[in-house]
Length: 215
Image 1 (cartoon, rainbow, N blue to C red):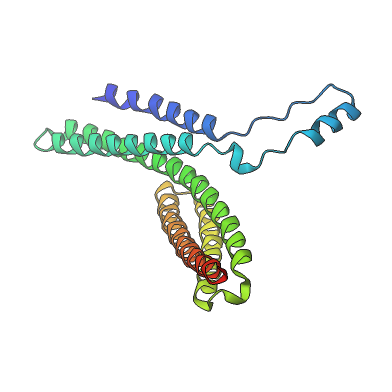
Image 2: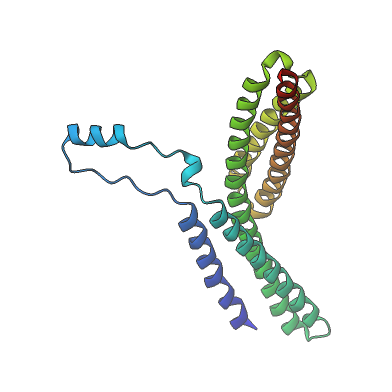
């Protein structure tokens, strides 16, 4: 049974490196060209925004990979526990230890997934925030209902709370406690995004009504 355990860790390390590769920023390369020529080129070439460089598909694919590995580890751990039933005490002890090791690896993979999910959620949040700002400008701030303003305010407040929760989680020395706090942060990020979506829906309705009234 020990052989099975040692085969899991390389996959986890590979998955973690894959996630890092997908999300790592490209290092800055020094330009050997003269400063004047460089300035001219910079002025002529539009600067790429964070949205342009963020590969949502790659991030989502990496997240799906980690979630799948979590399920596999949990399934293996449960199977080993079931196999340990009725075994001699010495064998049962070894199997239970191996199942616990798989549980710990599952928690590490879940933490990696949560960190990646946070990057995805923050990207969505910032993009929604920009869209909200544009929609408010189109509708006119005075035409935005208080309920919609509250949604926008609450979304930002909840996202800040989620960020604080992640900082708290990273300070936890215990893996299980860290994962628990991160899971709560995941939920709060989803709540914040939900409020943004509702606010955007309301703003789009206001904008359409305003355009129709002007015709």
